[in-house]
Image 1 (cartoon, rainbow, N blue to C red):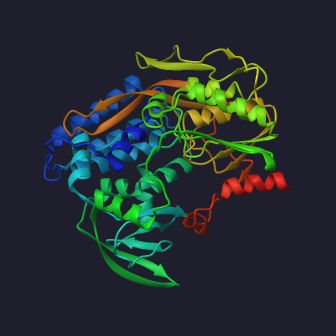
Image 2 (cartoon, one colour):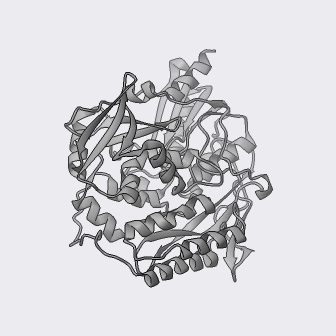
Length: 460
């Protein structure tokens, strides 16, 4: 799982100084029926030839029926946006979190540089859409406001349409919800385009009001976001990928791991996973703390070897992480090689106290693997929300595919990781011991609800 496309995705949507080359407005280009059907057939052929989890949650006849229906429904030329919206419904059929579909690279570059976007950040709570960050100088709609509709489309319909097109592992909805909570603005634009303004209906004190809000370019959105929220960090900072906070007087240590990808840790956080983790556990042992809180929230995974290294400091007996690997050969699942097979030994200075793990829908891929191994091998208290990553079987090691005509980008996994036993797979993530959901007030006021709950357990 070394390459997760959301890290590439972030490159387009975080503030950046990268200068793209000449980009051409893609919105006017129409693709013929023949070109669209050819792209769809190409996608299906690549999935069948490479994807080891294609039929894990939906049987082959169902997959074939969906693709046949998509082919038959191509009856007129489409733009790339229309075709993207047409094919991305397969995400909720295949149900694989690593099978990511994004618009063409040229399209994303163009819109990042030239187009206008919704100037708000949103959070979804109980299927309702709320503003949690205002990224414009227009103060008509305040943070905390519930949004009823955008450009005459009710938010229930918007959320349903975007959720249907989101990746997820199995029946898990915590991961697609997490994705929209972080990238709503972008995914909204993928399906609904880039209008110059938005007519937004919203609820205040039980009354519904309507305002017309000007769309803004990305650099303006980032400017107002930082202006309105100067205390928040919106980019990766050196030495922040892995952090340790030791509270000796309160008898706990908080170890936060934001990423398991070596390339991200080295290039952006300026950290070496092995060196930092080894030094931190030496500090934890020196402090003689009886409680360790491991924060894996929003950790999208990364190099499985780093997960094994971390586990060697958390377990006191030999352990396995991955039971088996499968790849597609000749359209059949076959055993294949993969990293970190076999039994792994604990480190001499492993932690033997009480372990609490903070999780949420963004705890995906390798974070799910680490959580699964902890659940199987030691007493662990999980706090937060269901992990986005599956604890039993996932796919990874994706190959980049570009559809020949539309140039839509697809990642197709090539290796299946059997973590425990596929027969145990329910299509759900790790369920927390204590379900803790931040309220809208918690989000707006920046309270760490899950961490505060966990510290409260010590007091009890």
